[in-house]
Image (cartoon, rainbow, N blue to C red; front, top):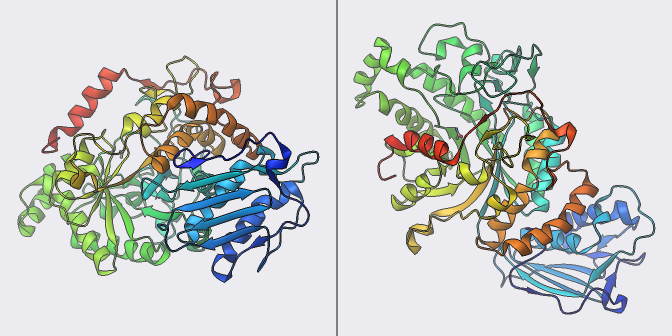
Length: 541
Ligand code: ACM
């Protein structure tokens, strides 16, 4: 959310200094023991640019408190000329109130060294605010291009500033394996890098001849999890299965259906190489998930489930034999059998499956959380069948899609998704009744990084569309677009001060373009036909 939209009221205009609260050398943050960590984050946010010490302790003119009558993430912010009161239903609510307070200060507050000549004033205000959705997420693909740890933590800061609370961390795929697994070190030794990357979106795109790789140690990941948790962001890991696994096959070819050797895939797209149906392969992945669950306390654990071709299972006498042994109906049941086996282990450890909407095509545990990505069809089908669901329709929140239909968009793929389109996101399918709609826990943006070869490029694709999506997830769909665009204009000054290299409304800057690199743009009709083909196997879609 940018500036609070819903349920708030500014009681005085900010242009009269007498009606402002001003941070001065005597300012301090009052917090009791439970809120000291939140108070210290506020101190850290306010201190560099102002140069003020802002001690956190029993007394101060910025007062943080828990108010048990508020819902957990709700907050009440009161600014008078004498001070600021932030009450939240839990430390998370207080934290969100602090984010709003920071937004009410001049944008220079985001600079990380002292800024002279600015009066650090906050307009007198009353804000009562709470989120519309519990799941306010972003998926970050750190496989197609690795994101170094410190950039991941910067991204978490940006999420928290926008009151987003779930980082869906896409850690494995055909092009790389990014999580250290102690029992199977070759996953990162071999799977952690590829010899080159395709440049462009065409199937025959040339390779760049440059090795690419990187992985997080378990200590790195614990640090990321704790850093995120302090900012009320839950990191939900995703280990892809039973497709999108070629990096694992490169390390351990015995997991595959066909004979190796395999390379960590240097291309983009859907890869035919999938897992076999051996008990030893299930056991391997159970070991992997055990280590993953030791690192990530998230109640949900991503198991993949998207875009898994069945041709190798159909052609393999051994897989056909396993299908008979296991009593499965046919090739199409292998995927959900595999995911079901993983799900049993997750449930033993008190976790729930989190998987892409293809899993609705087979048997699925009742407590699975489904990600509707092929438009909103999966959200409607899942909710009607009683599954909890997260909406992330490709045509609204896929942030790898081009940001306009202009010729300068870098490596343009699929349809244009503008910031205004992103603001029109409605996570709840309109055809659902109230009971069904309660299964929609929220939504998320998905940042696939095939064409984002650096954190700078992620900035360009993510912002400002992620600001629009964050506001919908916090304040609800159907907001006034004109009003949002005006507030966004102000908000971009904050992103400037932080150093976020967002896409400007006028178009990509020269250094944000990729002249001569082929994308794969589609018209809306082409994309709809493509999604309809993908949904052919989903009953009720
Ligand atoms: C996906 O975009 N393959 C989930």
